View 1: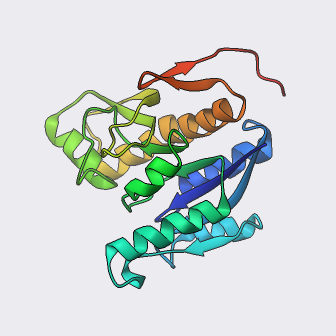
View 2: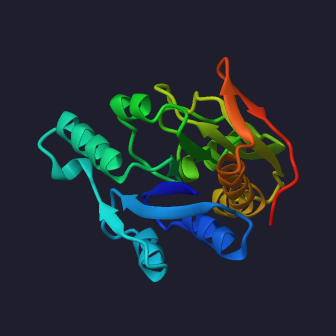
Length: 213
């Protein structure tokens, strides 16, 4: 059984996609231990509560400095001891000590086809605004392992989404979520839970096999 902790800052639509996939059996051999948010008002915490999952609020604002937060955050994650940490719209940089402690056990969903529109400052609607400004015809989402760099870890999966001429950032954001993020993230978790993914020489290797349902 893969025990996971999901970190979320906002509404928690990706969290909901995970919970729905577990409930439907699309994600197998997986249990959500806790949901952590840096935002006490995040709807994601309500979604967790509705599923009987503990919600934990940890914000850098509640600590004297960032180093103190990083230590506390890492210690709390070590206390929970998940097999996988899932960043599902978490707008806090993961401490380097946590990255080292959970090497190849932290994954993130990013709303673009990395390496496009990623890195420092690229989150939320900003990603889609920049994509539309650039005039790309295809965007999408990426699930990747987290390393010390920003959106630079080994890529697990990507899915393309068409951009249309009348798109607004909000419309494009919704389409990317529905057609890519909510599909990719549950699939990646299920693949990890069932031993279909490994990291070799900095790249993700997929072991294809029939799923046991």
